[in-house]
Length: 165
Length: 254
Image 1 (cartoon, rainbow over the protein chains, first blue to last red):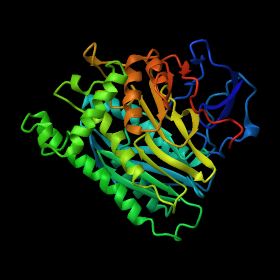
Image 2 (image 1 turned 30 degrees about the horizontal axis):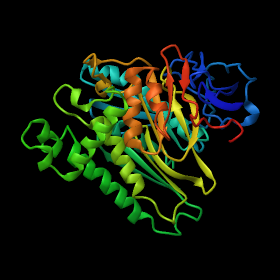
Image 3 (image 1 turned 180 degrees about the vertical axis):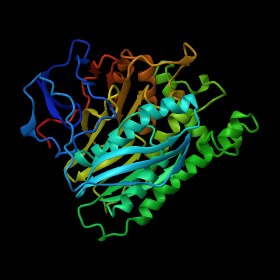
Image 4 (image 1 turned 30 degrees about the vertical axis):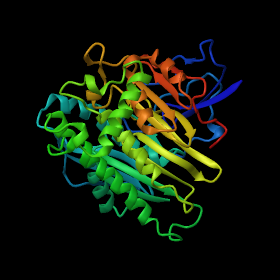
């Protein structure tokens, strides 16, 4: 018997499965991935999941949670930076020592259709990675990402404006 | 933890060094500089964006691989091995525009950089090349690293968490598509939303992940044949399949 924990829908819950390898030696887990939330909606940047937050076995956690923005939030927009397919600038909101939201303040990709499809997919990914990497109890994220140096650079300059380390 | 970001290979590669002692106990900059030099050198040799790189010159048939720096022949040989191991699903020679080992080089270079970081001064290191991760050791001597796997159906979220010391690569349709090229159909295609491969070497893990993303769930079979490598696929419907030893983090470990 193998016990497998997988965080589902980001930070919202922990799903525990009791399973054993199927006949071919391949595990199958239907519907494990929840995609109810729009990738551009805000996410909870709360504490990392703990064992106490586990859902009952086999029950998927609910979708996204929207952060209630506390009054101490501060937002800054980073410098506009050239990236491979255009010019972008990043805005960031911090509350105390936590990044609570990351957004694109401006984006000009010159109308390049390939660039637009990359942006639509990759920019939300970058936003959420910036938030998740500091919130979950993990040391990194593996994903087919398009980590734009420009995104990081603009994010860093926005954080610097807020004296955020 | 010492964190460094290196702009290289058209992206940002992060290097994290973990140690038991305080950050100022040992000067880690010589270690870091060694890893950074490896990454920049690989970019200079293999970039297909830099018109004067040896790889670009090979693609234009101005020089042969024998006239290029020796690591070119080494990487092309490794690509050949990966092509065999994946039954031809990973094939840099089938790319439009001539041989393109870009799908192997990023992982290979990050692995070289990680290998160069081995030192008794640290408990572990992570080289994260835009989502493809080479690591060894852990957060502490007895605690391996934990990494999230992006949910391809909601790329802001994490579909699963793994616990490992080693390599972790993910390929999917939501990234720049150019290396998800089906050498059999001769077009860009993917049969699962994403494929993640763990194992000892990031170069091969990256090539395997690319191959599984293109081949689909049947690609799990060729990973299953290989010692030390495990794979996880997430279908467009959200179904996960994995090889029996896939290193899921135990839910009790937080």
